[in-house]
Image (cartoon, rainbow, N blue to C red; front, side, top):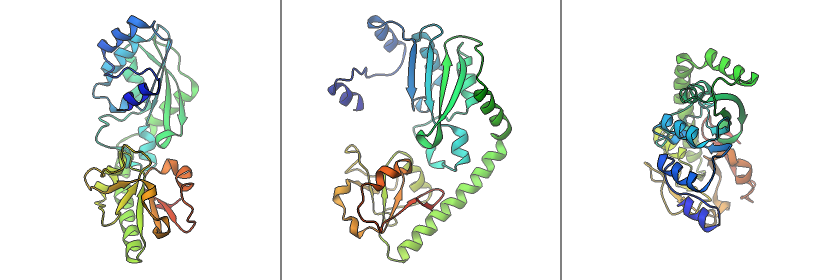
Amino acid sequence: NVGKIANKKGLNTIIGFFDKKIIKKILKTYQKPDVLVASSVVTHLKNPKEFAKNIKSLLMKDGIFILEIEYLYNFIKNLEFERFYFDRPFYYSVKSIDILFKNVGMSLVDVEKIDVHGESIRCYINNGKNFPKSNRLLKMLKNENKKLNINFFNEFNKKIKIETKNLIDNISLMKDSKKKIIGYGAPARVATITNYANITEREIPLIIDDSPLKQGRFSPGKHIRIINKKNIDEKKVDAIIVFAYEYFKEIKKNFKNKKIKFYKPIPFKEL
């Protein structure tokens, strides 16, 4: 559906899977590019090695593949367990990206941190073997080797149980005080939080989302109604659980009622 919308707006978009068939189709019309970009794509792939092979075959020799990807280490460090959800079969460290592309004859040469999706990473991968690594890439690999281990995951497991109970307890306190609570933002990860914490429409009766594609639908599993903001009276809202909290500044601008309090769900805190 998004590809069709893009084409209607004049953005030339090929709709299909990124496979050998598509690559042949592209190369019939265009020459090999010297830069390819994939943003928030690879975590959704069932066969990342096949994807890496296809990138190598499409990209010009010594060209650069720029990969933006959600970063496993930051998920764990920031307790963002909601970023683990059904359509992401794999989660990546810098080391795993390095190994993945090295196995198809490409070289991870640099990495930078970006703010998208809870501190993601932008990787620069050269279509060639044995290219030198930047100092900041070597530093991140060293940090992972030291910290990203089983103890790190075990602590994460303990903490998310504590923080999930904290979220439930705070919602209960607000409900006991007759506060009206709603949610804002219905990204896929809302299902992880509401299902794991067993939050239903009794706790949060509705979620506002700005996307017309989601309005009039329900959250997966717990079936919380998703609506357009124009369908609520914000004067009757006391608290908002902001599931799309990275967009909080923009979300807050949508409300004139200064008495509303906004909260991040995990770890639970006022924004």
